[in-house]
Image 1 (cartoon, rainbow, N blue to C red):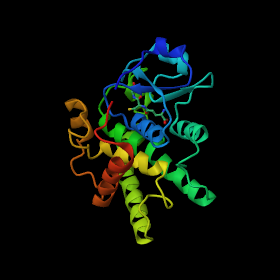
Image 2: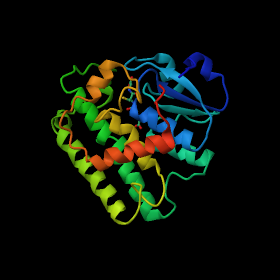
Image 3: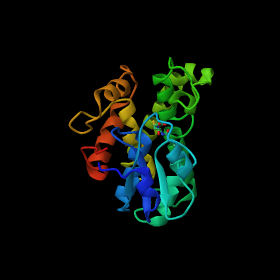
Image 4: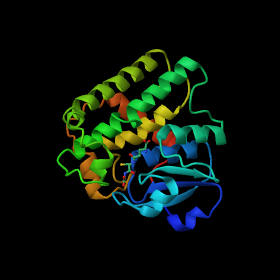
Length: 246
Ligand SMILES: N[C@@H](CCC(=O)N[C@@H](CS)C(=O)NCC(=O)O)C(=O)O
């Protein structure tokens, strides 16, 4: 994927999406997936993993990726903010159910995948558990000073995987193909992209650096229900496109 540098992106109009270059970061891949499904064009902007970039900080008020910068509006770096911006810019296809109960369920499951103490967060705590927590480093930004959460990360990730498997099986029993409701939602996209942190897609489908593949795939006996993997494969093939480009 071709990236514009931050200094060049600042003066541009339209939607700019800051992404971690060269890796399939699950938050970034999810944002890209949402924009792809909705056919919303954007300019990819480079962030380098683990760098404390003052230019990015000045522009987006934080140093992680993804960040959606739309026209002169405020920066949106949280998964829910990015999703709601995309829903506003292009309402169809809707990626949140219209029915309030199902919408709350979708947002709750999305938090359990993307939010603080969610699947991505706890999986990252597992990966960084022995890393020094230096100010502005990734372990510092992403909660490794909370040693209780680091110790409990694996158990928490197992709980969330059980939750998702149970939800998918209930949907299948009701004759539904997706994690929530009757059609593709953001939850399916989040699950597909975050599954890479547990069972990485094969190299031909996701040519990530070997070091990242080894880290993502390091939880050898991760209890991921085969139905969840079959589901992510379907979501990638039908909606997100393969190979991943990052
Ligand atoms: N702010 C996002 C989470 C973004 C996030 O965790 N990004 C990580 C992905 S591993 C990142 O940018 N890491 C690289 C870095 O911080 O340098 C949200 O709350 O939805």
